[in-house]
Image 1: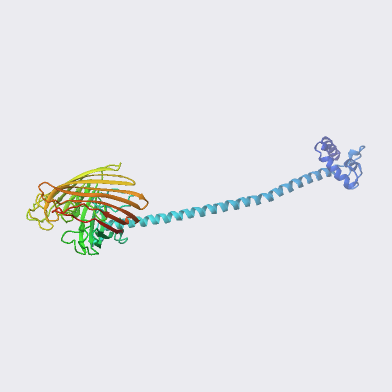
Image 2 (image 1 turned 60 degrees about the vertical axis):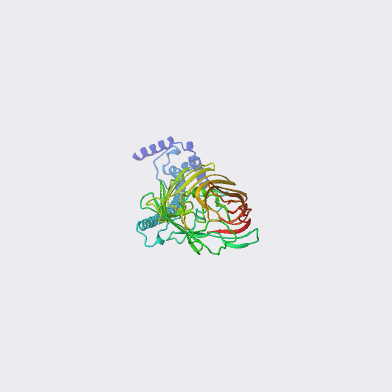
Length: 523
């Protein structure tokens, strides 16, 4: 009975399922029929002796349920195997892709680490270099605060001259500076002793209208300069020493530039003192002590630019001296103050010396200068010197009693043209060819034009006339023209001619016209 109930339930469940709806039944029947030659219905109706009987059945569907279960199991197994294969293939492929991505990620991390490591090493080297530089600067600072062991250690960078800047000239480096200025900036003697050395070797060959000729030295010189800070302040201490060199003996046959290159007592020596001073530079100006260019030359230097002659009518190099006794040229035993480099500049000068029996306790000469130099290229200035220790019958190197000098000047510079004019008025300041002191006035003009790269033409005149109670007929008057070729820096070759119209004290013809050629080699 139990078996009959189970068979009825099985037949009811099989009848309620529609395998054709899913297509799985038909495909399964085709496969099964292809193998056995019967359809599933025919196979179910075919008697199977190996299966147990469920009892007498009047219908073919009363066969046992096991044969009907076979096609369903086959279809399910085929579907499961297909899904399992696809899933297995996908699972086999995914680890490979993951491994590839993982390898790329690790390579990128290694590349970034290497790059960062290189940057870190570069920063470490930079920090080490900066630390070494800081230590070096601290050591230099400590050494600069210690007193120098020798004069050679008083040295740092190049000094700006205490005297004013030279008149501007075409292409700036084209012309030699005025006599008071440094030639080139010079070069340090060594890295540890920053003392700068500079020099200028100057030679010329001259001939006058009488046929007399000679080769002469032309105020050659060599110098040293140094500069260092004054402790922790904004002030600077600087120094300069310059020596004139007379490398070629100068005869008196052809008179050239009036500057004797040294004091009257040493002008004929191989070496002579030109400059030597120490100074302080502060935001409020400069103060210098020693032998240096006067405030009078702040104006006179505007026209003292000729290569062979010039500088005679303005009173700077008076009475055959370098201007020290009268306080107008390179003054000795002088204290000078100059205001900062503003458009309006003031200079004050005092000389304290024991030169004559008329010396004073303080201020043997007093001088002042006032200049205005604008950005447009125009400049105006004036200076005055009062000699207070002069004597009535001065010896060589002594000033004349009542010596007073005044100079005024104007200049203009706009590349390629430079023009300057000075006028001097003086008393008991000059001497004629007979040795007589006189008062008078003088003019000097200098003009220069940059005609071509490295080529310059220049010219001007000097005129000095006695006045007052002077009874002689002396006068000094000449025109001066020339050409220059710059071959390196401020070094140049020149050719200069001077037509003369001068007279001696007795009225006879004075100096002869002359021609000069030479070279300035600056270093």
